[in-house]
Image (tube, rainbow, N blue to C red; front, side, top):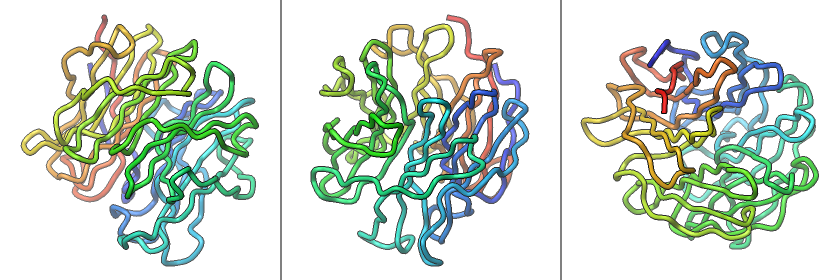
Length: 319
């Protein structure tokens, strides 16, 4: 099942988000420092032209506003005409309390090489600074969607853009007491989202049948300390659900497959095991040859004893 498993980028905490560009290159959006947000840093874009094995830095997408801050916590994805969009938050002083920076929008028209000027991301209804997360995706109506969440109160929202990610509005509540929402558009206005719970630290599924205008909770889908998630539609129609596993004695990354749009799931497939505990945040893309590229981060693993982004290239088992 696994063709390749190796270190992609050293000395980054990463929290990677992968996107396949129109030319087949894979773009990784990541935090560029080897610490879990406790040091100043920026959001970089790295590129792989060989299907996920070799990586090189393409640009810094979002630069911290001063030497004490960290630009991290983002959502990323493609808009119309191949524009690449990053919505990125961060911290005024990493490791501090209640000092989140408001997110900004960056748009690239050339695959992450150069970027338009920053655009402020709008506030959400509860007035708190929000944290974007997951993939930016188009709905049935062609408009883009992005998920974000706030803390105290813990509420997750979906916002909509009809102008290629320049402006966002029409916020809809996905759920409460959740964060780090990974959405996917299933087609014909049907959406699924996997969200990390505040209590228990497991994942719950939320579904929308009206192109993200309303959501219902369908219950938990993982055990405690299995989070956060990524969802991907495979070429054969199945859904791929990946997540970090932080249970004591089971630290790693797992995947599950569904043939019925997430109503039932197959048994977990183990993609990676770890020797450390600061791990996970997988993101996946599928190559033209059907192989899946899964990127994750680790503070320490059997591959390297310091922070890094690793990649697993693997073939999903036949249905």
